[in-house]
Image (cartoon, rainbow, N blue to C red; front, side, top):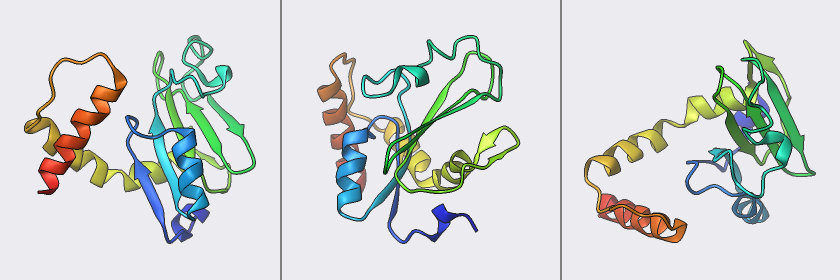
Amino acid sequence: MSNLEQSGRNITMDRKFITIFLAVELLKKKVTTVGTMLSDRRDLPTELHPVSLKNAQPGTVRFAFTEDTILISNVPKKGKVVTVLCMQHCDMKVIDDKPDIILFYNSTKAGVDVLDKCIRTYSCCRGKRRRPMVVLFNLIDIAAYNA
C-alpha cells in the first residue's frame, strides 16, 4: 500500500480548479490534494512547461519539490505533457514509465470524470474567454447537478 492510500482526507481535483495556492490552503486544514494541472499555468516552474518538454521522449518524467508540494510532469506520448500536483509526501517510484502519484490519481479520478460527463451533457455554459467566467459557469453547473 502506498503512502497516498493511507491518507484519511484526500481530495482529487480537476485541472480547471487546482492551483498551488489552493492546495497549500487545504493542506493548512489537514486536507491533502492530488490532481492534474493545466501545464501552462504561471505558477509552475518553467522546467515543467510543455515548451521545455517539447522534444522529450515518451516516458520522460520530471519532478519539482518544495517542502510540502510535489509537481510532476510526465510525457506519456510524443507531444503530450501531463502535470500532476501532490500535497502529500510519498515514494518517487516509477512503474512502467508512470510515477506512483499518477497511478494513484488515475485510480481515484472516477468521481471527477463522472461529474464532468454529467455536467457536459446539461450545461449552462456559453462561449467564454475569461477565466473567472469559466469558474462561475462551472460552479453553476455543479450546483444545478447537486440540486
